[in-house]
Length: 305
Image (cartoon, rainbow, N blue to C red; front, side):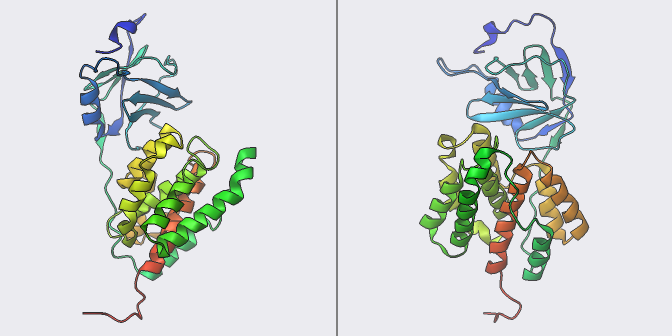
């Protein structure tokens, strides 16, 4: 395998059994375990954080995350070893049953497979959506960095434009408005991306009239990797398929059941994501619900047979 000769461990790797993993990764790992083509970079560590280690596999980003976090797309949850040794650009050996880092073997063979279920939102009435909107934060989060503060007004204006075009614009104006949010704002996943992720994730759930805009959003997001971080681009692509962190799915399912206490609890958990990412995701959810409220028929509208 490409890179295998460069990663002779100095000691037997510590074996760590994964708690759960995204079932969709089975194909990714099987493909990456095959010999790489000459000149193609092999799997390697992309970035290391306190509770997350990202591995780059071709165009994919696979996250090894502490199992105190919730399941997420392309993620493997593990009891994060305190003595794991890894640095960006370190080669990673990929096997169908897991990953081998410099001194750690991540074994997924006995892990619980995560299959996020879509939430059918077709039965929501305008009144249901109005109740949901009252649960969500009414304003965007306060930025926490000088860059965030400098870009806040521009971000707010572009989000408002995006909302207006989703409701009344044609495909070209929607695509332009969505594209203008990509890469804008502070954070490892910039605020504009998080807003777009929240809106797109909800639009991709079954029964959403806003789903008619998904092809347009897909076209706008297609070149995201040139304008934002790899993590953001990958996250946006997962949202296009209606996939996000489990707490986002919990919120969508609570909305589908009209379960106000569960929706409130899920909203509180989403708010905990990152410094401002959770709040920005909820801004995107609110934006999508506001548009959906306008698109749904009023009880007083005439019924056409």
